Image (tube, rainbow, N blue to C red):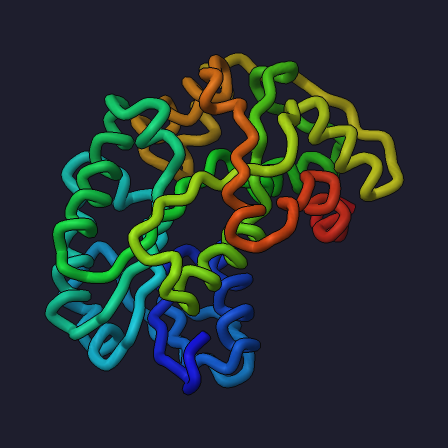
Length: 284
């Protein structure tokens, strides 16, 4: 734990950045939150609008920053994107270390298009001369927010592969692990695989949401094509295909419950039921 506040730059999508920003601010750190659009941030946190797809524009953010938490937006996973430039700007800006949010797929499916690109980014970070830690989560519990509107209006969850499960992770656990990596140099040079405590299927998630809101919710199974059509509204087609490959046919490594959250935090990861209870208002 540092003896004095240290400046952090936190670059990511808003919903997944907030828990980490809050954790660092509550730890007394000087935090700059970066996003493309305006965003609410905790008291004492500086917010800067910048675009990760234009790394040169990050110079004012990175100059003077001690460490950077990096979560790529969907378009930076697309073919032709070059997120390695962000690492170069971090080096030029005098940043000491980077915690990168990668993906479990770089280990379990290293030859997928988006996985190859992320592996290359990991390699760039390792060779950069910066201190680093890499977080490799599987699926996010917060992806269930895709269903919020249909649950509110129709009391239905529509998803593919209803009876195939993976150990999805609560973003709050990712934030806690990221904060530990930023605040404690003992994690430098480590790559952590982050999962929830159990395998859960989309039908199981539906039951947990129903319990959280105290109202029955039905499940409707989508075809793969139907699911992809919805996903490509917010992410590149290649990333949608890679994600659906995992959800539809997970490997033994992708259904393994990792001990790494426990190893870093000294406690078990949060369950999907816990996540659903905390976010019940989104589904009511």
